[in-house]
Image 1: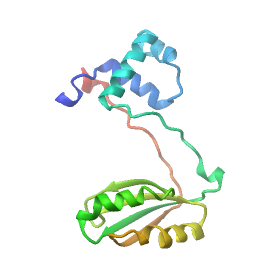
Image 2: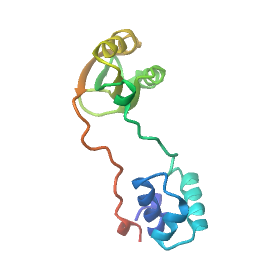
Image 3: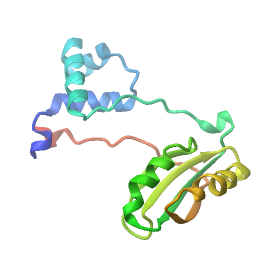
Length: 160
């Protein structure tokens, strides 16, 4: 076990595992499954938040039901790698950009965008993303289906 997780134990991992299955699970229900008190779950979660392990909770939304039918991934080439921070700050202002990842390989940045349709995607690409200073060019990959979107199942034996 490394220093980074020396304050994390098997109970913490079991609590996190239960919450990753369903973040709305009440602490009392998690406590029963993990064989601790509800107060212990609350204290452990506060500790994990303070450590930066837990960064909040999120809502999983089926965007297609709200009219956003296109998910695309963009490989973004920068004019210079030193422009990464500036470009990311500009991309963060574009609501359709959901994720930005600094990558190795052909692209400097790999981003996930969501749009209503192909016309909306084209408008976002041409009028927003490709106008960001520092972006040399982009390659777009349209997702036809997302089959798996799940949290990592952590092996509790790593934390004994």
